[in-house]
Image 1 (cartoon, rainbow, N blue to C red):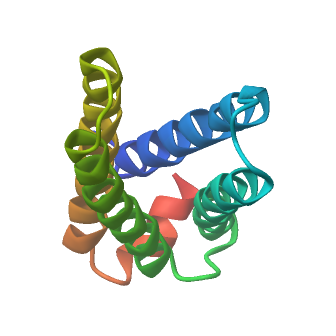
Image 2: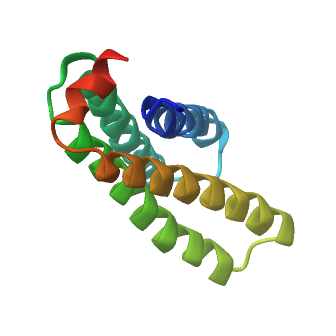
Length: 132
């Protein structure tokens, strides 16, 4: 049987990879205003904070793992539904839209997989997930 930690680790790993690497793009974009940089950095901080909370829950059981994973998953899904839709509607090149559609699909897929995994576990199983 596959470890129930795998979908959680995939979501956390993908989140950290995607959003920490996003900082490089933000700080390299000379066309962004100060407020544009701040907004984008705040988004990165929120994603990384959620991922950090999930890591803490995996290691210590606090905050509760299921709720923490679901919070990261919900934030991920809602963010990409709003931002991804805006990207598709806005006047961007097809390649930009394709790349962001792929990022959105992987992000939402990982979030849904992690959500469904922790939802299927009973509350008593959560500490066992943390120790595996």
